[in-house]
Length: 252
Image (cartoon, rainbow, N blue to C red; front, side, top):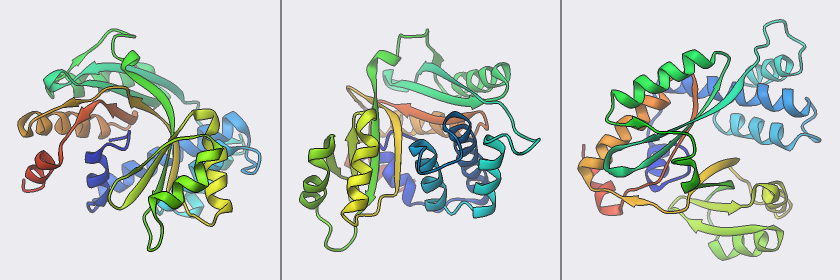
């Protein structure tokens, strides 16, 4: 689940099965191909590609896969595919809002996959615009918490470069920015010798819906079903799972 919710942070710690890793790699490769097609194969001149490759490397995507994805995106490989981005809107259990971002070469297949995953897992599809207004597009940069690195230090480095907020998430610092400031902020981190795990433009909810354990299980089941689709690139939700509910879920 994207959006760097507290649940996503916890989920990130868990072992990734081979099937999940394969799906993750496929999504990372799509990101690299599309970033190359949109801005060219030169990472120095294409910050979106730079961040897509960085995310791939941090996720252990093999260099051969990265190089082939760049070649396809640059049109140097006959197997290149044209992908389109589509956003679907939905409602989950307990009145939660969900945005589903697809990157697909077949819009009909993507629409069918999303609809089946949503309706079979306690959700409903929503009309365009009825959910999207609850989210804002933001740059999100994650920094692994290392020995000696404090929230104050991260703030000191990024505050004058367009960062809106820095949040301590246990083993990560999550920095939010306006999308236009994301490159300047992550460049400032690099200049200060602070490594970052990922930099993405995401949909962040303006208000969150707190749920109990029963509803949380249902929302997570729905999001997992969506993320299992090869057509779905990212899922964003305004669900808020408290520390107490998270602790209960971890006992499942």
